Image 1: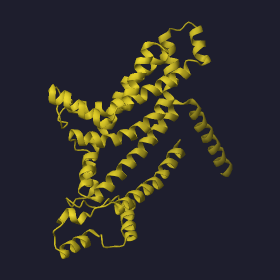
Image 2 (image 1 turned 45 degrees about the horizontal axis):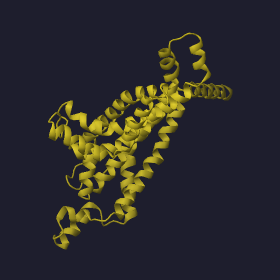
Image 3 (image 1 turned 45 degrees about the vertical axis):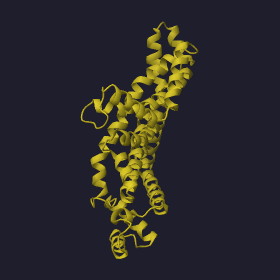
Image 4 (image 1 turned 90 degrees about the vertical axis):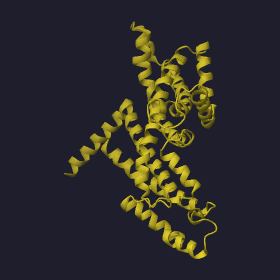
Length: 323
């Protein structure tokens, strides 16, 4: 298991380097000059030139890229913000907990609501419950997140005054952003759970459990759901990655001080170090989350457990032979 973790951590290095390359060169070819955003379009040429020299924009592109990449790899330095002059990494770290809490909360809420819905839908296959739940799931997947966020904001905050329109001062401030992201996740998890449960409840060990006289609830939960969770856990990592992207929209709609809102403001100001740093941080977070999901997947799936154990025994035997 330890070798697998180290291998996955090493694979994160080319992933991060690839993200750095793509984001850096996309920022280079993107229309717009950050100097214009900082000093204005009417600034004298000497002022503009001095600002370009200060920001390092007069260096050749490959020199800028090498300097930027070396700073990230050796020091974890994402550069300084063009607007505030402060280190981008520090500004991101103050905002990243908001984005992470929003993402994790939306996934947890979606799992709590969708897994029972998917199980009931599979058990009551082709019934009106199944049809209604799958219709709701399809609606959840199909509704655009930004439209849902605006509609819930208009209804619960503007019309009914039940929830705050912006900010996260209390628990009520999290409800609308979590709902906005969680509805789409709920539809995805419900469909995955239903498909997995339909496959599991047709297996021989389910019929054997019923033949032994166990209650239907015990058969479904202890034997069925436990094995059906394997593809669900595998899907959680991908959903978290999608939710990290959805948090950008939610933070802009509900004025949350997270990484998404920070990146959106940076894009409008052509503040490329902040944009690049935000995307790189989200990529690293997604890679770590996928590693955690893989480890959970290995802990749940007995086939992977036995594979890791056999590889560990083989590695130990080889070390003994060498010794």
